[in-house]
Length: 194
Image (cartoon, rainbow, N blue to C red; front, side):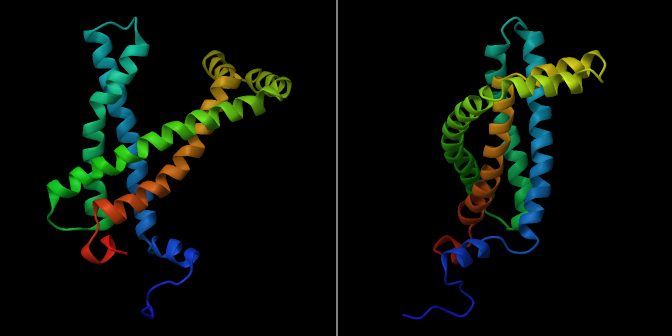
């Protein structure tokens, strides 16, 4: 059985073929907006819940704010991807539900990877604690109170490991969710089977 000329043959060619020129850049632009919008809605609901319930339990309010804001954030992301990236027509309910599925499936591996990577980075950074403390001291000595407190906070090994792990996992999540949206959420009949 021979493959058509327009189909990539090697594994690398098939992977690169998933990212048409311009489409992935549009995806990243919409993703930047989605990230800012998602964080803003999280902050809004956290602030609202803090006023309604009690600000004395942020460890309980933070997950609740995330749970409340997630459906809105996924819906806004869905419309951004539909209109500006994948440019599909119709199928609103089916695509919207598949969008929830793509994000839902991606959450568990991301959380597991985040936990493991954070532990790995903590172990690595613990070996360099003295250097981190010196660097934080040098940077913080040139800052006023608020930035100084922020640098001191970030320079703690557990905090720094979490920020770095989150950034690394986010990079892989962007690529995986693009493929998921392309192959599942906004799949056409020709891309759903390939």
